[in-house]
Length: 247
Image (cartoon, rainbow, N blue to C red):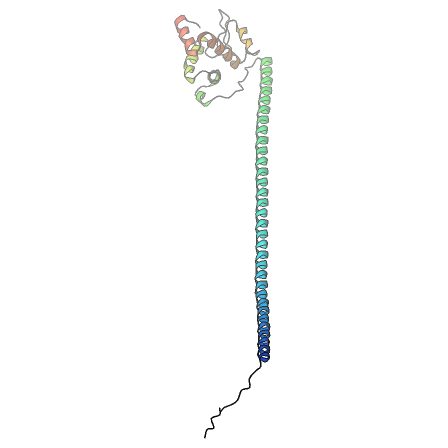
């Protein structure tokens, strides 16, 4: 029968000092665990932070290298452009120098031909004067005068050189045909007029050349000058000749 006493296991009661000691132990254990956790977290964070900084450093180095390569390429292109410009300038200068030299050589050759031509003319004139032969015409006959020959062709060429139009030549042809028949040795027995233009006296033509007796060109040049001074044109001289019988 129940005796009325409490039954079950009896738990001995702790003293107040014992409970305080246990709580202190648990607190110390918690603090140490927390410290270890913080330390571990700091280490892990440091590792990640170090890795991130390393990656950034590598990225920074890579950017510096790329910029250096770009600068070197730009500098190389600039130097290549400068070299190309210098070569082009040199070629242009050489071409200009060659063209100038060719032009000077052409001018010099032209002067040499003119001097040679004058020397030949003087020699021919001297020879003709000494022998009394006709002095040959040293000039060229233009195509517009090709239908004429002999002293007429010379007259046509010299008339154009004097500044008259080719349309004036028919008048000049009629005038000198009437006066002398274009004979540079023609002499008017009554007056003594001489040559193609029938200058009187014939020595007037020496103002153009000492070979006036034997040179058709000298006589024609004098006649054209006379016509221009008095009648302006060959046709003006021919009109006057028809009206008065002379010019």
